[in-house]
Length: 502
Image (cartoon, rainbow, N blue to C red; front, side):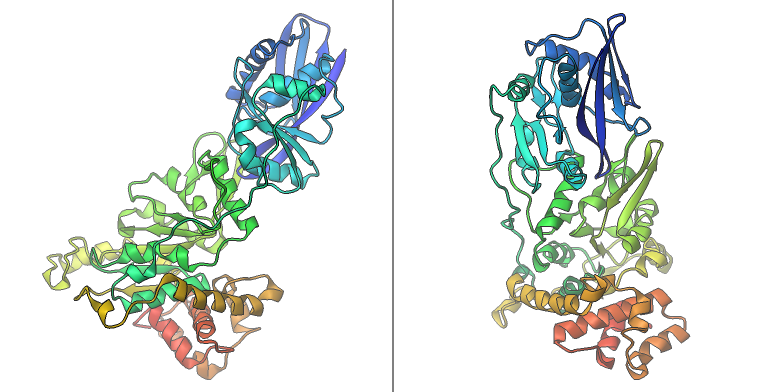
């Protein structure tokens, strides 16, 4: 009897868990049995791996082979265990030495001829391996640039199973990656291209400075989309860890561009209103994959024609906006994907949406039905609401050139630095993340400053959540103005952004 072990990683969302692969070669009728809750695709691995081993000029045992994947109660999905299974069998049959297997994670799918194919999720898998103390990994050669993003893990890339065998025997070397760092070279549109709309431009700056959600309402062609696409350029660049979070989500569903390093520019995701609920929030059979809202993590989610998305998609955002993550329950477990983004909604004022409001042919009832597609609970979570007016002249920049993205970003970064310094002891980085009780107790403003908010609460024109968010915006306005704390004018301006009748 011979026994050998290798190690791989099982992914549940972007969270990984170490999987021990055992190969036992014992007496009995020739055959291969795979245990440990494999999915249908993984059950086929024993035939796939056996062909790959034989086509790599190695022998497969002619006795009974038992393969175990542990923890046995953890569902195993996908083909990333192929390389680990093949090496475990070869080690159990004494075809390769085991001295390099300790502390090494093996990832990759095997073709029948022994080629190693890339698999999704290499980046989060290696992040998980590093977290449990593993410092070496063998991955397909195609996945080396992605694997190289993880510091502290020695990465080896192999084009075929035969190359891995030669490396384990000390007869050859595997390819090593060059150091890779996230880049910030992605081109973003410039805010100077937007004509007019001073109120909407100011709201965009406030949203960027405080991490607030934004609703833009106005007729088509007025510049709502132009403004929304320029928000990522106003945000500070992502840190390396944040860029890896964004890349890990895209790695899970295979949409990560392996030909270039991840960008430090916050992502911008703008799904069409016909997107399915599963593609929007995430889903699928087995283990749920990330949706559009998770791909917007650390960036901007833009919903153009927001009223057309339907209640099933829009109402799914309510919990996400509060918690910054989405939980998807499936038969094989609950998957958590991060979804901390800034939401930008764009909507027409009515179904017919003429360029001029005086040309509207909608009945009052039709306008009311259209506006209620964005529910009260969802709008209550949107801090800034701006009604945009038609542009009446295209040469406004001849009188006063509009500010560029770089000019506005400097003010945004300065405001964020003030907020980060203020909340540093609590771990918050932007005003939008500060809980309401903290604003009303530890950082309470004088009653004369918040009187207008309290009157709105008394009249029922403002909810408790709305009052909290109003104070968050007021702190952002104070940071942009360089003031140590908000005054009554800042609070009134924040309330004006939120609800005019309040």
